[in-house]
Image 1 (cartoon, rainbow, N blue to C red):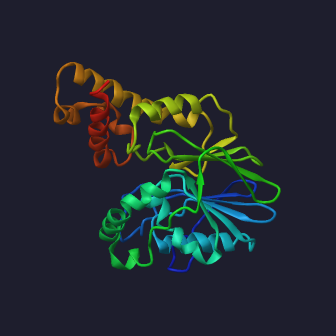
Image 2: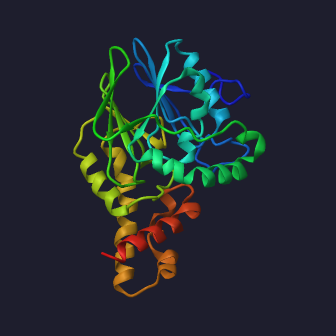
Length: 293
């Protein structure tokens, strides 16, 4: 399929398992040039229907994801599932409104998106520019997942599981039972540095739990279209563990947050793209949480 050639072209996708397609986002910040195409977006084709998992960072990229789906199948798009609230995963939702899908998310997603809607729209319009941002809007979930929820696509089911606070307070993981493919959203970053918008302690605890699960493959929120599991978790766990241990030591040594931001986990810089963009924010977020341990 053609990739990013024009407004109505289809996004490039990889079939990582039978009926499971993933578009790989760029390792970049949002910009007019990439139009918010910086996160992975996926779709799963069943005998009766299609489910989309995350829709990228703008209406225009969402339309190209829609075109990619139509290049594979004409089956109805029944579900649009968001793994969490961040704009690079949800601002393409509006491209699917004409399909009248159920919009599925964590039970805290609706409130989180509603609270941040204005700031998300303003900041992303500023980053993307008027032309790339045009048509983007916040579409709230219509199906809220409070416990395990199974979605039937015909011949295959997707199991949605809400998580405790980790990357955010509204992380949802999805398993395609037909292929044993696990979708972790931004609970898993690869190459792109992880970003903390929830709890570093909760995230590390969840990674320990996830490492005991079995899956044929995992789709990260940022990174390759698919990775081996659970080995895919190792680099992220090392980064977050290093941040936590360094910050705890600095707190014990009576260092300030600004001092911690200059030194904590700098040993990790060479292993991650966008380190200088997001690392200091991660350290300050971790410091604010861990100083009360």
